[in-house]
Length: 259
Ligand SMILES: C[S@@+](CC[C@H](N)C(=O)[O-])C[C@H]1O[C@@H](n2cnc3c(N)ncnc32)[C@H](O)[C@@H]1O
Figure 1 (cartoon, protein in one colour):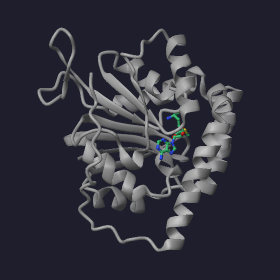
Figure 2 (tube, helix red, strand yellow):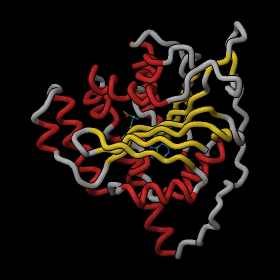
Figure 3 (spheres, rainbow, N blue to C red):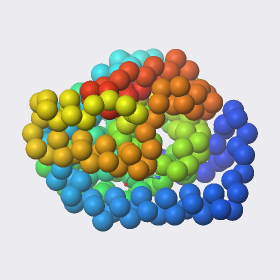
């Protein structure tokens, strides 16, 4: 499988307003801070999320992917069968991509992350899960400049990712560019509202509850979404049939849309 690099400008239906120099510096600092946090905290994050419940949670994203075989699917396997080509953005230590493969073992899942430390951990967890690098290729890259040609994927997905970005508009324009027309966009992101207490007093072991607690703290700092704003943001970038369902005791949105 070859993935030619393509850095053609994103096709956004809304002309971007150039940020002021101060805003540009704030965005750069935010980006560098996020890179630092996820690189320095990669081992801790992997320990906390390498649990059956987190894996199952990531896997459940795949329940909203289109069924295969689809005549429009972009990829065929060695036997000529069509299979979904899925991009997992911000794959981190790999659990989200591994979870998706649990549900869709025939799919090609490509994991992208901007932290090399996270990707090294993902290689380790892939081996531990008995998967080969061909089943889940890992790519070092930034969502702001995706190293893929236009319309390269049937599905774009991410778990706990968009809320971290200071340049959400640029990221969404890139996602819309690399998703094929009619392709699916499925994600899980933190929502304003909900009850952490309800979640913490429910099922799940210590590590899951710790991850949810930290998710809540982190998303308080980085920013949570509310339905109208998130819906408008996606629509402005060419996504249609936007469907946002609350999940995780109201702390999260399970989002679905089509390009
Ligand atoms: C909260 S973790 C989620 C990991 C995984 N999806 C999961 O659910 O376990 C977010 C990941 O996004 C990555 N990330 C953040 N900003 C990024 C960017 N601009 N481009 C690529 N990866 C990014 C971080 O390095 C981190 O691994």
